[in-house]
Length: 113
Length: 111
Image (tube, rainbow over all chains, first blue to last red; front, side, top):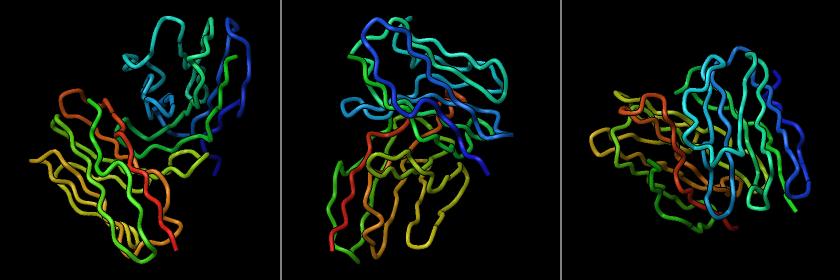
């Protein structure tokens, strides 16, 4: 079975550029999570969707970050404009139900120069 | 509310046992445990639900004390492959499906 698929695996871009991270959840899963992981702050939940609807975006750091889930099989996390402090590994995870076990994608390692 | 894990780090010799604790200030309905190896994504170990239960997977088991809002992960006869960072994740009763990961515990097993 295909797991959670994230793209790109690595992204290096200059400060001020727009960055779009993509995620395809496991088929049949109705909950999707975006996380950011850094050495300083650990694993942080950014936003959580249930049945394509954002349930809690209180973890989104600021207005430069936005996330969408236009359908059950695709989600994006966008940063515009990007800043060096956004450098981190961004994980997408999906689950069956918000409280179910979460399957993580391999992550996107983002570096903003 | 981010749960607190203890210890922050532990080093074991192969075959030794370890306990990792996860504590929340909020009433919980579920606790998840994950392991993350360096450079990889977190991998699910087990989930414990309110009203349960102690679960086990080979030599790794966990308990959930709802009254104390705590969970513990038990690793017995540790193997080199157990090395990694262990995270608990908690689902809070008061915030519905809100989910928080703990601060993480780095576990290193040496020969």
